[in-house]
Length: 491
Image (cartoon, rainbow, N blue to C red; front, side, top):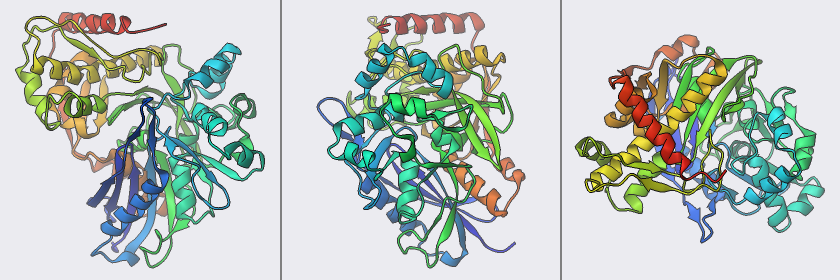
């Protein structure tokens, strides 16, 4: 087999990775660079889109040092999904910073629309509960608050959307203004039944649907790039997926009922439900998994704002740990009977509660509560939140989740993985690679370009965790968690 390479860009909340895959689908090199987390006195979270684009070029330049660049035949992109921005259609200059998915600054816009009685109408069309989490309200906020944005929108001289569209636009020098079905379905502006931008919903948010990106199959050709001259010739961007959809695809969750959880700054839990959408009645949302080869798959999904970010909080703000790796040892050292719960509602609660005004809380402290117990509560709250969503999905889909495929840095924590298996009462499968968000679009691009087939999904080796906790204890612990959450809810 001739030597060939695929580049995958994984643009996430904390930074940007570039991954290099060979013709066998093996990951052979990775480079990465972090970007600034811009947080103001109001708690608004922003990113500099120009910094992100510059980092993309830099990590690709580092990635391709020392290899035959003429053998690189295609690229894929995965992205932090709901982070939203706008830019001038002519100059390509961003109109201020991007609003990060965690940021709830657009809550007032959602409250305004809710008062109009339109929340359920929006949910029935987009699969999404009305929330400032999604790009619809974020883009609306930009149009209302960023100088010159509304005037450009009225003149049709604006682009706005998610980070994938921004990167595709910049990488193709403005020739391609596109997004894929997975990212479009996360905007709360896309009709998941009609598979197009919903003009009525767009109007509710003050957005002209004609200014939205063209929606394409996830494995289509999104345009060509040489990464600002890093490569000797342009190559096709042949796969774009939201990061969580990318990990679902990379995990090989191709059949209905298969479920995965990505443990990142936040978490996305997804269940493939096949070609027919099911609207949730238990607090999760319905999205598109992807459209690949012209075939659409849907998912049930629940999103959490603070999972891995809880560990960052323990380290950077509370100074209880110096590195994430310490959490495993401390969790195992904690007093077994301590009843501490941490509810990490630092920016409200996402699925299945959808309460943007909920506040974080630590409950159940006793005289035995110390550093180790607080750290363990921080670790365990990740598993509890994911279990909330697994149970909700099981109710909606009518199936018990017996296996959970997981990925992300926190999966290296053996205490967390065993506790996740115990509290969810499911087998947890941890692959030998942490790069599932980037593997997905790489696989999509390689499949589209014909350099490998579906046997590529068999490459991952997995470590298995099985439930060990007594069933009565499991339900006692979970009931304690639900009681703790109830104390912080405002509605």
